[in-house]
Amino acid sequence: MNILLLGSGGREHAFAWKMSQSSRCTKLFIAPGNAGTSLCGTNVELAINDFKGIKQFCIDKQIEMVIVGPEEPLVNGISDFFSKDAATKHIPVIGPSKAGARLEGSKAFAKAFMQRYNIPTAAYKEFNTENYEEGVAYLQSHNLPIVLKADGLAAGKGVIICQNHVEAIAEFELMIQQAKFGEAGKKVVVEDFLTGIELSVFILTDGKNYVLLPEAKDYKRAEEGDKGLNTGGMGAISPVPFADEVFMQKVTNQVINPTINGLKQEQIDYTGFIFFGLIKVGDEPFVIEYNCRMGDPETEVVLPRLKNDLVALFEATAAQRLHEVKLETDIRQAVTIVAVSGGYPGEYEKGLPIDGLDLVQEDDAFVFHSGTKQEEDKTVTNGGRVLAVTSFGNSLPKAVEKSKSILDIVQFDGMHFRSDIGYEFY
Ligand code: AMP
Ligand code: GLY
Image (cartoon, rainbow, N blue to C red; front, side, top):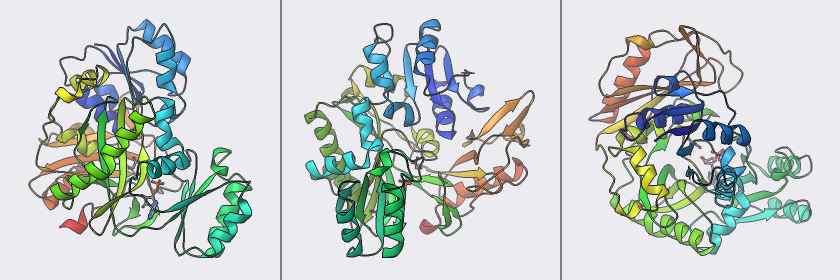
């Protein structure tokens, strides 16, 4: 079948790489893609939110399935756009309806949903312009630290953890009165701070059934030892040592099953991935956030471990046949290390040539492109996160060593990375 994949990051390169291995994939197009995805299929100059352009492209190229990488088109309703149009309703979209994408697109919706279905999460209250004064009073007597979350999508910046009351009230004022995160961010969730260790759990669901993908842990802070600014993710590991059978059974019973049942009960169409951002407090899982897509860089360790044909898996999802599927995973340790531009997550230069890409010939290692672009015969940097180098190993240190050895070969000006990914499990 002909497939269109939307997105342009490391996650999408990993998707494209995996789908291109399938005998069921005839032509693969990626919009807009990056230099890495162009090695797996054909990049198309289409913006991810240009629904009309995407529709026309699908008709012209006889696309038979659309896979949506990032959250934005989902929150904007691309699945509904396709299913409601007579010209595209036969094309399955892997990605939830607009209603389903609210799990990520509205923090207030997600919290209320979790409360309705008794899904463990931090205690919270919701505020907006109408109960602003009540909110200030609530903050004044809240335990520290205080977590503030803007309701709508905020490019990963909408969560603020405040260490004192003055800062919390100032941020609250900026969010609600000054619309720091736009109109949708004028609604704010104030929640208790949870202390524990985080991990990411993923399912692929057809709305009735689901398969549990390998779990992962990402490393969001810019500097070693989990210090420095927050980033999109500096690396990830899978499997996660503490996610043992007992813990994952709790996740299934207390988080995943009630979420699927809640979606069914509310008749919310959901075909696609659910990413549960979890924190383990003591021995118990709590939900920090839902995402309506896969994680990045988590996908770069999850998909290499998946032995199933990904296109066949998507076909089973579209046909609501996921109960017939059994996932097979590589039991070895996978690690990805993200090589970022000098200055990231602050300002950085783009367009710098990347050397050594053609010299990497390792088995069990993959160089996924995040922010790259092909300029004639040169591959150049085109973002903050540039490459995600994934390796397998029989242990975490071995896998990390392998990715680091590749980053001795592949280089660009100003490149840096965290060499301590997975450090707490050594
Ligand atoms: P983001 O990825 O921007 O949504 O940031 C969310 C991050 O903030 C999470 O990965 C956690 O590290 C942290 N966080 C969010 N909510 C809480 C909470 N209730 N308690 C502790 N940390 C939290
Ligand atoms: N790595 C976290 C995310 O994709 O949101």
